[in-house]
Every structure is written in C-alpha cells, then in structure tokens.
Image (tube, rainbow over all chains, first blue to last red; front, side, top):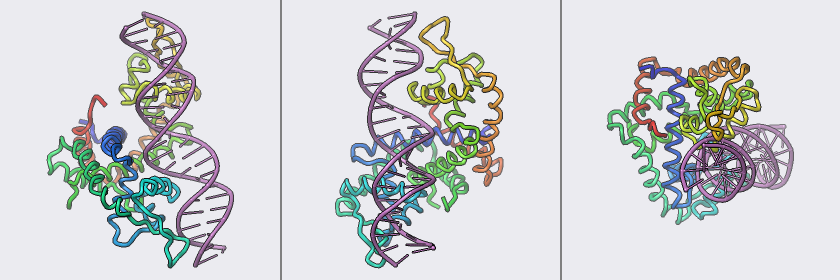
Length: 142
Length: 142
DNA sequence: TATTGTTATACTCTATAACTATA
DNA sequence: TATAGTTATAGAGTATAACAATA
C-alpha cells in the first residue's frame, strides 16, 4: 500500500498527534490544565521522592527553562509546590499539594478518555503492536 | 508489556512527533523553511491545478487563517505566488514559482532524510505495519 | 568554576473573531 | 446574504542566551 514511505509515516504521525493534542486539550480545559501540565503532574506523582526541576525536565524531554513555565502554571493552580532542597539550596523539589493529589485522578481520567477515543479503532492486540513499534522508535534519552 | 495503555501510546506518539519535528526543522533550516511550509509546498506541487487557499487548508487539516501565515512565508521566500482566480475574484490560486520548483526536490530530500533517520530502527515490513495501523487511526476529515 | 533554576525573549503552529471584497 | 481570504490577537509548547544564587 506504500505505507512504508517514511515521509508519509511522518505526516500520519503529525496529523494524529495534532488530533490527540486537540482532544486532550478539550478534555482537560474544564479542569484548567493543558496536556503538558498533566504530563508533568503525572510524572511528579510517579516519582518516589519529589523530583527536581532538572530531573523532571529530562524525563519530560524538555529543557529546564520550558519546564519552569509548566510548573509556574501548576503552582499557580495550587496543585504543585516548589520547595528548596535543604541538602542543595540551588535545587528545587517538586511536591504535589493536597489539592494536586485530589485532582490527579480526575486529570488522568480526562487524558485517558481522550486517548481511548483516538485509539478506539484498534483492537487491543493492534494497540499492543502499535505500542511495540513506537517504543522501538523511542529514544530514551529524548 | 502494557504497551496497549492508551495514555502511554499517547505519550509515545507525542515524544516521537516532537523528535521528528526537531529533526525536520534542523534539516530544513539551511533552506530557510519550516516543516509546515514544506508540507504546504509539497501539497501545492501534488495538485494538478493550482489549489485555492481554502482547498489547501482543508487538505492540510488547518483553518484557512493558519494557512495564510504559511503561504506568506513561502511567498516572501519567492517559492509560491498568489494569483487571483479570474473566474472568482474572491479566490486565490497558489502556484509554484520557478524557484519553488527548483527547491522542491531539495526540500523533499531534506524531509525524507529526517523521516528516514527516525524510522531507521524499523525494517520495511514493520514500517508497513506501522503505516497500516496509523492510517486506520487517521481521520480523513481532519 | 560548575551547577541550578529563572528572567528575558522569540519562534512555530495553531486557533477564534471581526473585517473586506466579491459573488 | 454567503463565501474567500486577511487583519488582529492569542495561546500552547517549545527554544537560546544571559544571569543570580549556590556549591
């Protein structure tokens, strides 16, 4: 079918991601957050210890300056707090507030529903295949 | 492996697209264009007749106003010309200039190399599978 | 001197709303 | 009145460079 053409694959990927971002933005808007903010919140949650800015930025694949904007919004929304690391006063530890903990599941639900809609045309086995292929393309450093 | 989790699929998609966009931007930067501009140029080329703004916007999956910015840049770079449609003086026909024709292949090459790099870890058969899965998720209206 | 994060700034890609010219 | 496109504006998601505070 010619689907192996990398430029066409690139375009498909581009269109799909745009659609996904829109759907997620719509679902998350009532909660006052963007997809990037939800991602950051989710990764903070997933950490055992409160992560530092640099650490979280790296896990998100963005530069620290870009994370600053994301965390600013989460802090203003009262979901995350910045704490100076007592063991290294240059570093900042990111911690969920009580409110952050409370809305976390709601956020995840909203994002899951959006993703569910997008991937609905695929049966579980096909999703598994897709995930496998995509993860083989994934660069853990990025 | 749990790859069928739609939220994880969404994150994979997001990271991959970002990496692709970066790689494409890098490759295209020496030519002074962005990926969106290359896409528009490519679709103008692919048309038999010079497309109109509305028509091209729809094929790109963006609103006409967003296309205006893209075409502004291509026109300023001397690659595309706007012509008023003599049969409907409200409409604008988009045509490649000689220079646009000349750089078209270079652009496509640059974009192809970026896409090639990204999809290099997959064998042709796997690319085919990926393309098939992605196209089943693709919404032709979008 | 090197590390951590922020201030300042900018760019890409996209959107909605209001407007102009034409049909 | 409806259509085609643009001006005006905005916002998400990034980036680089220069800087301050701390190590």
